[in-house]
Image (cartoon, rainbow, N blue to C red; front, side, top):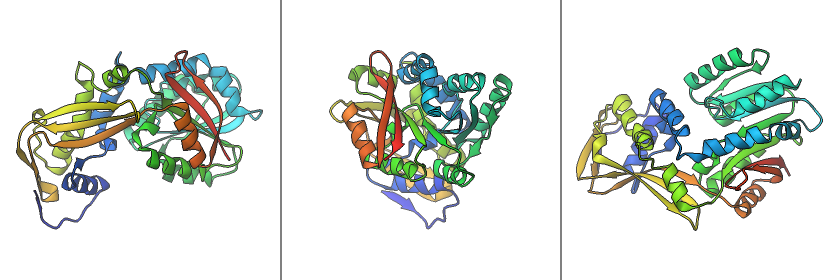
Length: 323
């Protein structure tokens, strides 16, 4: 049972927490893993030996740098390189260094919802690539893309790395891709990383490491509720649990109540009852095969131009154009 008084939401975070924890089954969005602490935890995750995604994509960009750069330019060395969810830019810097050193006329526009992440990325780029044009865009993907789209007719190359597309169920992925496609011009390109289906144990290990970093990252949404919304979650009373369905390619993360408990969130005037072993669904990490990627593109009005992969074909970066 959820007991609450009438509440006026001041932020999207408040509204989403209220709705997610009042719903059945309970759920919270993985986008709320990220604050200053969450950003640091995710950087730690990307360096874990079990978290192969970053390493695979890094190797693809390193092995195919020149080929990818030429594909982006397609005879025109002037374009905007726009990255959705830029993070620390570690992988993108491989491309940026090559573009900067080979006389490509590129403006890099990283988009991120975290201002601290953008500030850190801009500072590092000014130091490492002082001649590169960098114009960070703070906000949601589509707010920033719409703003960029109105500036002028310069060709856009949009990056969406890290298999972040996998945080969306297929229907939502199609809607996302359609929204990007509608902001693309005929010559624009969309470059997306997809984590492909593989040994199920490899996938499970990537999201449930023995050192507990992923657990802390998953539980950070509860820590944020405690800090920002005056909640009283006892994080030790929740278990981090990962499942993977090799048929659908869907990995899901849960927080599971270890015992019956009642949690209060004072800023929302909310009391939440948990039964023993009741779940909060926090994240989806979708895995793909070639047929599914082609199906997503077709339904979003996109066509596959080419692809780049690691030798084992466990991770792929696809290049799309508007149909």
